[in-house]
Length: 219
Image (cartoon, rainbow, N blue to C red):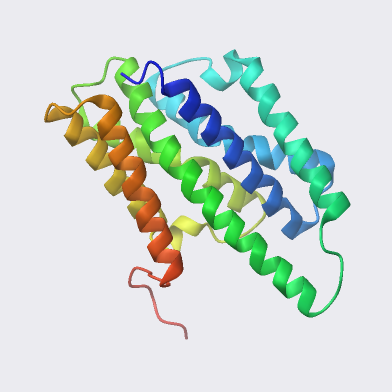
């Protein structure tokens, strides 16, 4: 079990996910409360769905006010930084700022995705399902993509997992690597690090080289 790494991985995952939620809130010009809601939803959405699937009620996010408080504070700080120092110029400057936001979102999304996958798998193990590889992989992927999916739906954007950059597939393959390396006797910490590294590399390469899965052609 990730007895020592689990809290750190979870903290990194929820904080980076919260940042992506707040940055995405800029697309709909959300107010400060809306930005914080999007930040917390992105951070905890996948974990809440995971806990409900595992029969863990109330979900862990609602039983640990400290983690929720930290996430809300992170969301507030990011919003204030964007509000005070965001580029409000017009024309090319806005385009450059938009590009920087997208790059930052991609980087943070990749980090939170990889961390959430291993956190989800570890939660399934802790719930007593360490003999069920399918369930561990499934809840790992749900934990990874759930928050981002809810974020995109809330801002009325086509979810990333449905259209580009090998997002959910990276989470799925990373979860498979984590689970089966563990089953082959690899130390849990090493299998988790291998999964995180794989997801980060795949996400970076897919963004860098514009990799996409085959999709329906435009009309």
